[in-house]
Image 1 (cartoon, one colour):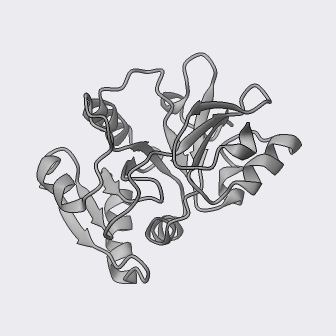
Image 2: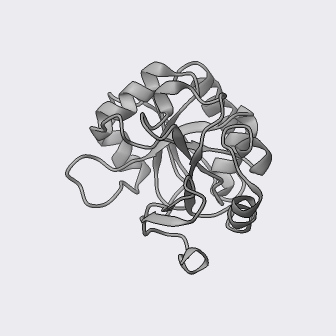
Length: 206
């Protein structure tokens, strides 16, 4: 049964954030809100959590997982960013964008695209997510909480608790969050290629 945490959307309670972070450090798979929509997330080295995300979402090995980072310094540990891409990504963060970039050796092999050796990264503009990332001190391996055969992501914490009670360990509810997934921009070839049109403004990449 998943633990349910009610978090204030503007002033997250440090005690609650600490409890969520402790759970994730101990191997929990969490459903948590972002500035685009809910996501599933676990710790970087949590193989079981990653396998459970694949199972819940029915993902194949070509799916790009996303490392949700607190800031640009943290993001830079996990992906290779040249000067031109750096400026474009920096200008769009924090925000509702996921960027596909070549991974560094810090990224576990099971997270990489099997052929491209790339991974997704993003820096969310969401108070609760940022508080959790600050407490963790490391990124969350994440994927949009979009169930197989459903057109839209799940958006209500109580509904996620009801439907996924036995497959996730933690549900973080801070009220309404977005309903549209991030815009996904692939920079792995050096030029911006929009793979998914989502919540982020596309004009800067077209």
